[in-house]
Amino acid sequence: MEFDIETWVPYRCDFKPITTNSLFSDILGDVAALAMMMESELLYMWDDEDCPVGTLVPENLMHPYAGSQEHRGFAIVFAYSEQMERVLHGLEGSGDIFGAGVTNCGIWRSSIFVDECKVLVAASINPMFDPEAFLYSLKTELDRNNSSGRSIPYFAEKFGFRRFSIPYETDNVTDIQILNVLAAFELDETRRFIGIPTELSLENYQDDWRGFN
Image (tube, rainbow, N blue to C red; front, side, top):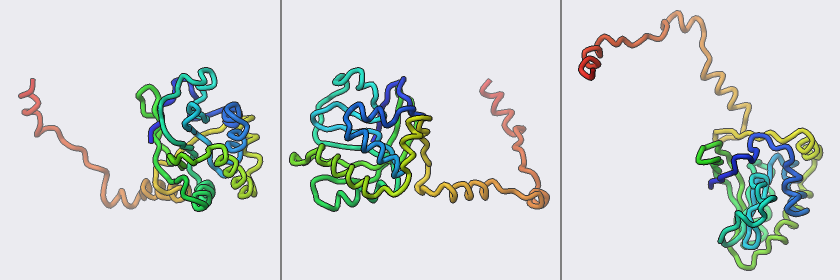
């Protein structure tokens, strides 16, 4: 999926990620705070009745219906975390009224590619789906699964929330750093035996270049 955000919308660092969502509704603010405790983030949501809401679309606070368009169903997007994946998987298993999955998300600004991150998406086009009931069920499940991280929303609001993504399939940062170190590892003895990298000579190409001139 792809997001096209406004030029003035913060992406790398958001200074009010909970407040932005709570201005749309109290339940969204609660879900946003609880998601951060699960090492995730509420990025985006839309349904049939309202314009897109979420941290990545704060321009709708000033123009509540300017960005609304014809669409069907419901979708909510979270930054990926294993804990959040387990919560959505558990809710999905309680019925077949909506589906959830993992996908890559491209972030664009004025036709410029800003970032690509892994996200969790829950979506439904079932006419019997109730977005408000889903959000309350999600809030209840998030609250039940949160055993730590209670201070994360407070510090995110006070000092700002720094976003980052890992451009690999794995989410193990330590393994990625170890692989990067090993890939760049070079011993003096190795250099002494194999020598320095040879430089290409352009002598054989001089006549060809003269031909172009």
